[in-house]
Image 1 (cartoon, helix red, strand yellow):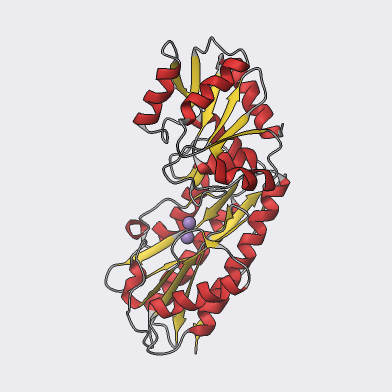
Image 2 (tube, protein in one colour; image 1 turned 45 degrees about the vertical axis):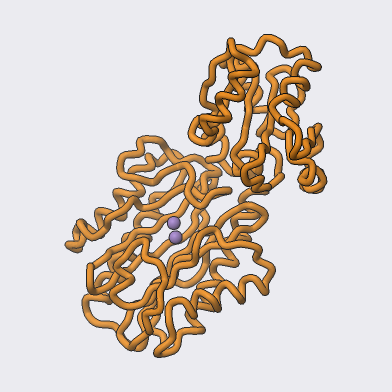
Length: 366
Ligand code: MN
Ligand code: MN
């Protein structure tokens, strides 16, 4: 059993949990290295407190689970079978008749599935396993950091392609298409979220979606993208100017860059997480743009592009070695334009390491 599964089993015993049922593809990937989107079919990792964990999966996925390295048992079921019955039969064979407390992902398990589960064990009650899994997922091991670093390198490359492709009159969507086309040629199977390229006044939309706006001299250009490498995500943002930059654009750029560097300076083990946000916010507020920095400074990064920890001004937890997250302050001036600079950062034993490497000095693209 992996160290992660061992840790989870230890938690189950401490809490008196008889059985854990994991159904979210992200947590199954985390615990088994098997990634699968089963659509409406049931895919579950079942962990009895006293016996070996097993997977239940649609029969057509069984080989892929083995290929992903899952060494435990896999119950494959056909579309004509009831997987819940199979689970109960299997647990009965293991002698698990008294199941009182079942841990599930309460934020993920549907009401319908919860009812099916409770119908197998009418005497049982459900508790949440999510807090424990998110606590585990927040600290990355060396293998996970290696994958995140590879994903970050490819994100750097995506920004480079985007900048190299900019031409007067091109559209946001054309740049998105070129970035994703070139990344796929490099073997990237998926983006961690929809690639964002925004021009001009549209850079003031923190979550804008690319359209057919045409690039013109004097526009700011914002790239926000990431890729998935063996299940692990990257997330980078760079903002550049096209042909020229005005005084206010330059001022917000310099401010965001100073804020981002101030925040990264605070990234070391033991620092309260809120201080990272506060460090960036202080720089932006003293430049007079405090009310234009409208989001937290960052978020955890791993199997999901947003996970724990949340780098907000109210998070009282402290940074720990192995945490990986983004640092991405921004300033958004409605109707005029915005700047955001985002890196992926890993906390090391004595500080931090930045995984994304694309240069951050103001770049005016000709
Ligand atoms: Mn981003
Ligand atoms: Mn982000």
